[in-house]
Length: 221
Image (cartoon, rainbow, N blue to C red):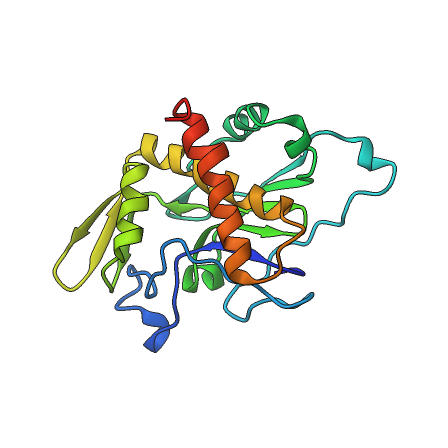
């Protein structure tokens, strides 16, 4: 999640040697956990991210976010395209979209590989992170029941690989997950100006992602 009240779609919990078994294994994972920074402080376990200045008074008339696209990095890919993000935003009420000032496709760096996350919110900016080209994430601890349920909602498959666990996606399912969960969850954090406690902010963003992401994309089933 690096700003005053920072939230990220995190895939890590600290462990010995960052919880890594080898360079291909993820740190110990909290599949949907986000970290909240203090006022203006950045959690130590998140690599530095680009800060985008808030809109000026004149720019406040803009109704659409600025888009920044960085290359994903070697052996990584961005699960969605800029056009797909634009199209997904058109399905949200304009009163919501106009609150988001920047959507950035961030690159994967060595530091971020230590504590990878799917997405992050910082101020009025949303950051989306790349994933392995193989579409297989490797963890050294089993997922919680809630993590299994959420992955199943979007077609992700957890598998016991002996001394590791893997989370496998298809391109279509991963796209669905990013467009209708990660993106919408982080936008929920952008909108939440009321809650300050970590639990309350997460509860709101989770609700927002279900209502405006999962249910909306499935005809409000």
